[in-house]
Image (cartoon, rainbow, N blue to C red; front, side, top):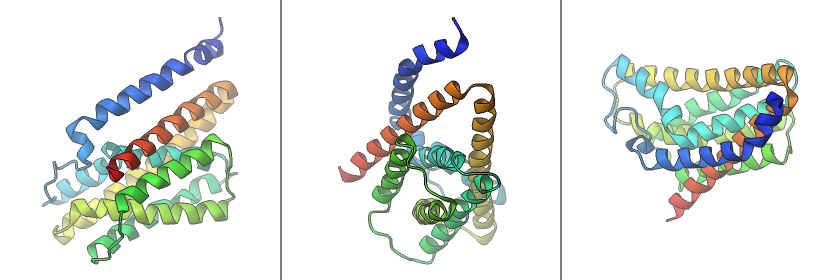
Length: 217
């Protein structure tokens, strides 16, 4: 039996494992999103670690990064790596809005909606062009960045700057690295790439639905 057939046979099992993993993470302390346990970073190092960790342990934020990978893969050439910068830059802007006392009502719910919408676009292969996707990424980035701002309110300038650098860098590294990984996987096996994209899209969709339900409860 070929490797591809093994992957196809086990795809449903993989999806179930992803769902189970999401539920385990949702029940853990990391679900609170804050690498510092809710404490405001006080040093350059704490700010950097908090910035690097927030987009990863915040499951809804990480799910959108997965969605961004899937949508970016549909672009051509350099656009795959340039368009995601609209999201990354907008997250910094969203944090600045939060720190500037701007108010976005129901921000957590809106973050979940961005994950759901992006996952639906990826799963239905309703891919957007570079210009439209840049706009979607920018709006989504403002909402995610606004949520990131909650963890850094009250911090001094040094940890604040390192926090911004940390989460901007890790987000772009994940999106660019994931996109490159999917390209390499496609060159090895288009079937495996399609399965990886489907499993990732389903996981992101379920994550968005879970967070939306929690925000409404």
